Amino acid sequence: MIHFTELISSVPGITEEEKELHLKLFKKEVVPRKTIITEKGKPERFLSFIEEGILRYYLLDEERMKEVTFAFSFAGRFSSAYDSFITQQPCRYSVETMKETVLYRIDYDSVQVLYTETRIGNHIGRKSAENLFLSKAERELSLLTQTAEERYLDLMHRRPEILEHIPLKYIASYIGVTPQALSRIRARIY
Image (cartoon, rainbow, N blue to C red; front, side, top):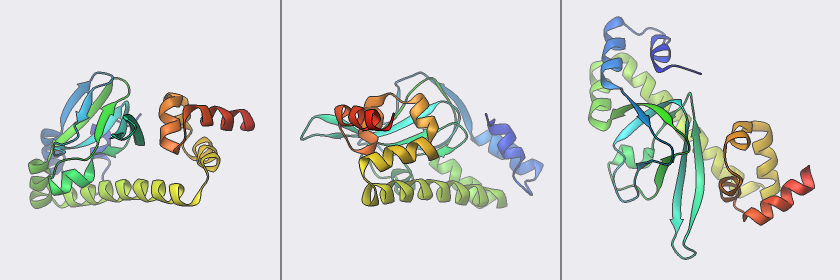
C-alpha cells in the first residue's frame, strides 16, 4: 500500500514548504462502502488519491434502466471524474466506493493554488492527468479492438486486481456483456 504522505515525500525535488502545502490542502476522508462520491449531474469537485479501497465509475443506461460500469480505480492511484473536474461542468456519470475507502482529496480551487504557488504542483498534476488519460485510452482501445473474451483475458493478465476484488456483475458490465455471457466465457477459459 502506498501512503499519501510517503508519495508526496518521494517526489523528486519537493521542498519542505511544498510538502507542507500539499499535506495541508489534501484532506483525508474515510468513505463507507457503496457511497457515491461523485454524483451524475453535479460537477466533480475533487481530485483524489486512493490510499485504500476501490472506486467504480458507472452511468445509467436509461433505455434499459441498468447501470453500465466503465472504469475502476484502485489504491495507489489518483482518481477523478476528470473531464468534469477540469471543466467544472456537471458530470455525466457517477463514482462510488466499492468498499470502505481512504481518500486524500483536494478541491478544484486548491489545485489551482498548487499550480500557481509550487513548482512541484504542476509536476504532480501533469502525472495525474497523464495516468488518467492512459487509463482512458487503454479502455477505449480495448473496446474497439478486442472481443469480450479477449477483454476478459486481458483483465486476467494485466489487471488481476479487478478479478480478485470486483463482483462478476460489474466485471460483465465493464467488458460489455451480460452476466450470463461472462459465465460462458469463464466456462470456456477455466
